[in-house]
Image 1: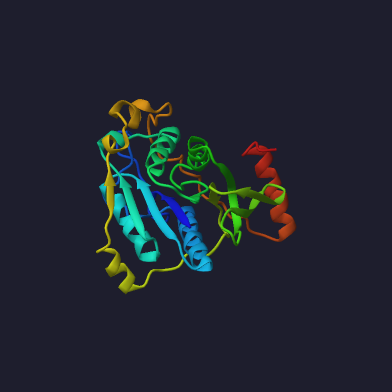
Image 2: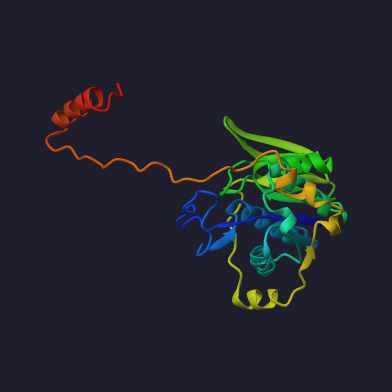
Length: 264
């Protein structure tokens, strides 16, 4: 079975994120970078599917700058068989639609059975790339998946999708695309020896020209959505503690909400 996992490298969720002084971009000078957590669920599930089926090939794909190669090395250490890095200055400033188009160009170069993505990236929170990618590829997609069962003949799958009102069970033929939700699995930590071996595995690099894309349609110039500035959220006010017995504190809280905060 041919499995493809789309990854994005994002700032560590525990890191302090700050914009540059002029607000034109984020200050990335000392930021630690990791695989997007939802994409880790997708990668782990691809590995588990391969293990359950007793074979297959997992290809990890990312679109990003040179540093994103470390995310692919981590994917190889976890269990991916191949890695493809789409990179170049032409891709700077891609929005979700352009990103999906670029990934579709890369994935169309070879046959696949199942594409796995995270439901969203934790740095942008747009939750669009996976769905748009399925549209570009002309295949079915299932979002926010918390369980996947591939049929014994590897021609169809059943996905359990988390919704606002419960869990929806969907069946479809392959090829298809799923986006992984938290709870799908618990990603493994690669062993030290696997990390060392991953450094020796080949990593294919693709440019815009390799994908038949012009610079005008590959990055910010081809994107409809642009980030015009960054700023820190307003600082919250100081916390105020109320003393006294619970009934007295409740009365004082009510007064403060009415008279000072004007909240009620």
